[in-house]
Every structure is written in structure tokens, then in C-alpha cells.
Length: 187
Image 1: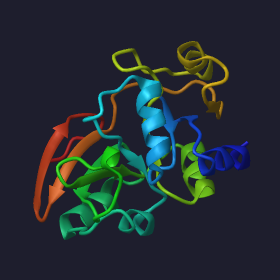
Image 2: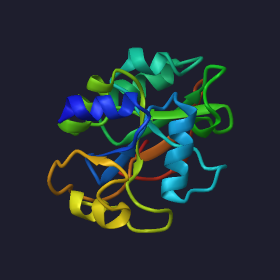
Image 3: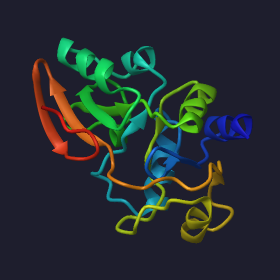
């Protein structure tokens, strides 16, 4: 199923997959047409950007212009895990993944999510698999209830635990700003 999901990403299609909290929707984060398709599917405002999953630091470096020593420490302490870091973006990235000059990414601890990013071979989006304003789904059948059986390929990983979303923190140099408090508390 991972091969089929990676092929769907390469074709610009949407894939739902489990994470350590809820199901998420993935497209190729560097494919502007796929990002636009995802925005429409979710009914999301154009000014809201998508956070990403990466396989590790090397993939993150392809997105970021700068990874500060503080960001490096936070990655060592909390990745894989529910900490999304917004870091200065490289130029030329799609607008739907850049907010205030930063791109937000994390490494998921969920084994299927990790394997999916590796199989895709590129950064993927990790936005909750629900229409804007609806509750995030914990099962593949809930994803199907939202989008029907044909709007996205679903990697069924069983029931996800739910809980708090990832903490979203913007790191510029040695400054950290919590944009969304979630599962990780930064001291």
C-alpha cells in the first residue's frame, strides 16, 4: 500500500494517512497544483498554509534557508514527535507552505507516517483529514465519511489515539515563539 500511496503523491493526488494523533491529508508539498487541490478539498482559506512532514534533517534542509542551533536542539530533543517547527524558508517554495517567511515541518513518530514520507521521497503535507471547521478523524472510515471513497487514497492504520495536536513553534535564530500550544511543552 505504501508503493501505491507514494505513486499517488507523485501523480499529484491526495492521500489520507494516520499520525500519532489523527488522520492527515498528504500531497507533494512542492507541487502547487496538488496543494491547490488539497486547499479546495478541505475548504480552507487561501491564506492558511499547510504544515509538512519530513523524513529527517536532510529533507528539512531542502526547505529551510537556515536551521539555527536552537532549532537543532529542539529537533534532537523532540523529533520524531509532535513538535512542528516553523523555520526560515528557502526562496521559491509554493506560497501554500510558507507563512511569514517560514515553512513548518516535523518528523512524525507514527511508523506508517514515517514510512510514507520515506516512500514518497519528498516533503508531504500533514493537515488534518477533515473539512475546515470539522472534527479531525481518528479512523479511515471517518475520513471516508468526510470525503467519500474516491477523493483520496486512504492508508488505513487503524484507530489513532487523538489527543492534542502538535505544538507549533516558530524559531528564528535563538528566539522561539509558540504559535499553537499542543502536545509538547517547551520550557
